[in-house]
Structures are given as structure tokens and as C-alpha cells.
Length: 92
Image (cartoon, rainbow, N blue to C red; front, top):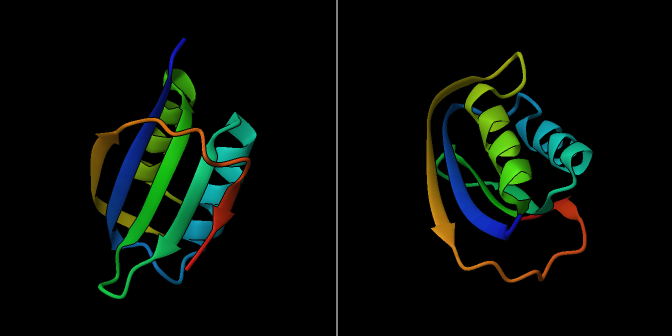
């Protein structure tokens, strides 16, 4: 299965609810690499790389988020896979 990369923007009540930490935990559980961060406008941004199945599972999780969150929208943009990451981290 080919490796893919997505750039994700999550809108809603997604800051102050451990969204980044839980995204990192979920991505690491599935074996995805990349990063996640808060944006000044209240959204969460992430870049996720891995197999198509792994990336799909992490993106599906982003639609739900942790129990204290309320996800209104998830925008997913497919990008060229780079393989530049060795882990999944919180950045920014």
C-alpha cells in the first residue's frame, strides 16, 4: 500500500481540550508520522503521513476528537508524500 500525506485543518471547540495530545497519541498508535499544532484562529492544524489506511484512521479520529471537543469541520488536503518525519509530534 502506498504512503500518502494529508494536511488537515480542524474547526470547532478543539483548543483547550487536549486535542493535540490525543491526536499525537492516536497517530503514534496507528504508526503515522507528522505533526499537530494550534493555530491563532482557534483551529488545529496537522500534517499526517503514513499508509493510506493509517492516515485514513487518524483523519477519521480527527472528525471525532477527544470527548471534551466539538468538531465542526475537518478540511483535508492531499499533498505529495515526503517521508520527512520519523515520529508524530506536537509543534508550534
